[in-house]
Length: 225
Length: 246
Image: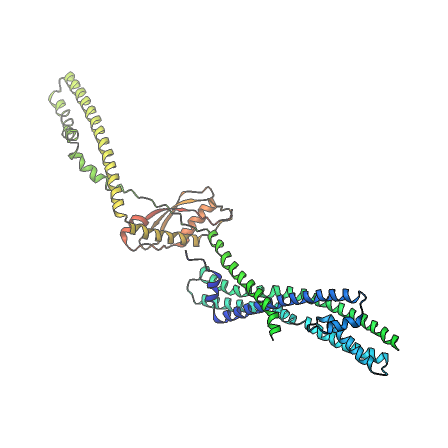
């Protein structure tokens, strides 16, 4: 009775192309997990800061004091950055003499939209990578499997006496590639779906904040006049 | 730069840890499966052919040698009764009484002699049989060395495997069914006869086993004629497939 084949022996005995496929899948899996963890931490941090900020913002504090406090920070999370950019633009424009409230509001909204876009880009970073891994790695794995099975059947054709034992290792080895493809794809797809849903929720909150903040500034601009 | 490195260090660590965990799980988790694999051992019963031919030879020899006092007497006595009654009627024809007495005496003597002879023969044949058995056992034990056993075992396993390969399982076959087949081979390994010695009770199963042997047609047998004659000329095979559905 021969020793039981371990997965590692199977991988070591695989053909070069299948090994390459396996290596790329392993790499894809590692990278997608890095992205998953990174996004996870990042989005959690952003969510917390948004909660904190909104609570603070609507607590009825003086916006100018809040602005000066935030401006001193190096690291501004999304919603804080939007607030700072919008408020800076507002003060700059309203200090200019003869500025129309409408034009002030247009400038503020433009700046805030830019900040919003930049923020969206930041939130959605790496999600495209996860989507790519999730959708392509099963196919890559399948390719490795088909190639491996093809080879093992071809070598089977050259044998005079075909037994199950002579094909089984080749097929098993080829199937490892599919297993790895799925191993890489499943977390990537789950991560992509989960994170894109969270990004969408965050973006909605940003949008809402933008509107609310610009209405506050709108009121202030008209009151000044 | 340092910022991004810091951002990705922890996720990278986690990702690598996760993969290392998966790999070790695979390495550890792979093992228990292998112990569950049931090994199917060939179940073969070899018949010991007790050859009856050598027995008459030893029997004939000890007959005059060992039990001489018993055997030598009847031997010369036997022809006596034959000529005894013969000459008597010729000589003493006119005396019917004497003739009758003599005949009676002869008859009695004959009976006694016959009984004696039968008893001695029985004792003789018993002893001869036992002797033959013992000598054969000794011979077998002496001849069947370890090497022979090992060689025969591999051939037996090969034969069993061939039968299993050629066997098509009837739907009514169940685990635990066994059938005893007697297989006769010629030195080339060709099957010349298969008979069911003891069936499993399931006719389809018995027939499937028998036809598997017939389909195999030829087995790998030892080239050495002594080993072949001893163990493969005619042997009993216990066919008991264990990989059946319950």
